[in-house]
Amino acid sequence: MSGDESVMVEAAGAPPGETLDLMTALQLVLRKSLANGGLVRGLHEGAKAIEKHAAQLCVLAEDCNQPDYIKLVKALCADHNISLISVPSAKTLGE
Image 1 (cartoon, rainbow, N blue to C red):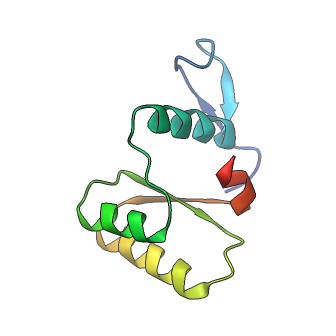
Image 2: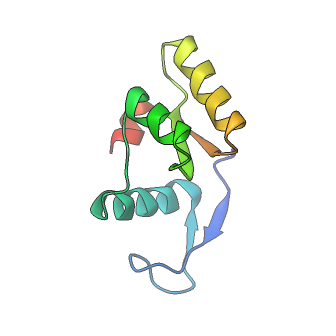
């Protein structure tokens, strides 16, 4: 992903027709998901949601220091046709 990507988002958190970058749009989606009880966090909960086919999107931090975790998440997403987005840091993802 390049930093200059932009997405047209017409959501409740943004004015209609406003162009947002990918990270800002992702933050809006994650906040709404958290508010509606649809956000799962962590490796164990995430793997269970992917296996149950309850997941629609998976977000993975690129700075994860466990290569086995990265391989597992990528393999599960590929096997179950789940979209995978990588973010630069876990701190950014936590925000």
